[in-house]
Length: 485
Image (cartoon, rainbow, N blue to C red; front, side, top):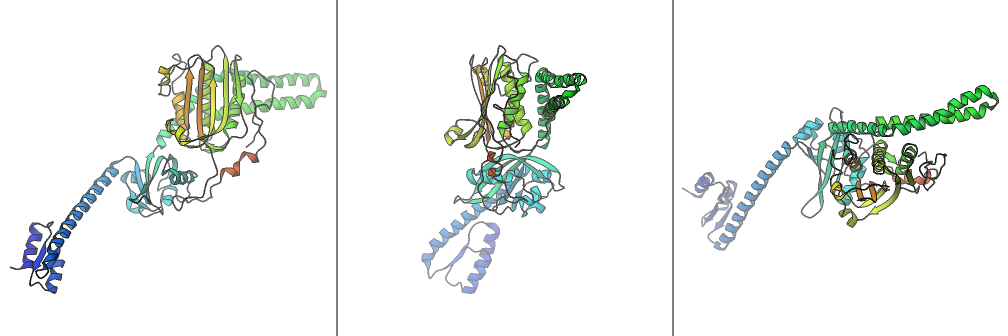
């Protein structure tokens, strides 16, 4: 029986216990053989002072190996939990190479983990053509370390899928960027249902305004009918009469186009636009549809920053807030719409739910109506809660409006006092000039991003500031945005 036999027995009976040779006769060849067979160390009896340090080192190695195995086991358990999640969970390195791809990602995108790992995430999710939101994401990750928003993506077989993406920058122990974590929720079906709900609410809004629309259409058709009679009796006035008839007909056609576009929800994709144009358009609609005892004021500066948004959805938010204001003033009052550029600092953002610091375009809708009680104020954004009588509203208008603003990256506030009116404000992120892309993270795409300055209002015709009162039926440019951009 010798030392190597003892090592073999110890490895079999207690494989995790370190084994150290302490011998006066062990040679170099035997020492190397013992290390190959699993010995932790060897110490010759001629140098006994090495024995205690060797034992301490062996125990440290055992502890480190135990910790490593615990970490590996924990990682395996976490990976199993990630595979059970219904969301697609992806991780890519700083070069956009995918390093983790869970089972839900396989289900949503059709790519198996073995096929997706080590591939470029932009190539996998967007087939190499990154959408404009990627530039916004890269900017937010660079400044704040995270980004939340909606992304149009593609499956392996090129089927469109819409996801709610939560991207987070992961750092190492030294605080240096290490990787990007994506948690993607498939909201394709949910968005389709939301669009159905939005359309039903748009039709409901049109129903509320139908009498005013009919009145305005009647006004546009009357000159046509009058012109026909005049032409029969006075052919000499043909040119002027035809011009009047053409203008009236074009105005009626334009009005019908706007109503049809609003009802259908034409254009669900976000584009760069100026919110002042939408506010001006709804102001003109209210001019002819709201009761004459309500004075409407539209205050525009003509200098608002551009935003990225869906015009139909934002028009729906404005319509909902204005109709609510009208209902709050059955005896008449004043409705004010205003637009301004604002900078929200960190302290202000911290005091407002869902707000973040940055540059915004703020739209204000204020009335002088009955106001909202503190008890009702806590519930106004709850689905199906309504302060109106049964049959007068679904209670979905404000929750839907708030959801639209949130999906645009903005937030909404409300202030009200009983008997003194209500003021709603919604803030939409301004499209400011962007810095260069932060490295290789998600920077691919066929086209270079266009800065907001390329579509600045300076390149458009002048916008006339001011206001116009309700009930003034004469066509005037005062307060109206004559801006084709």
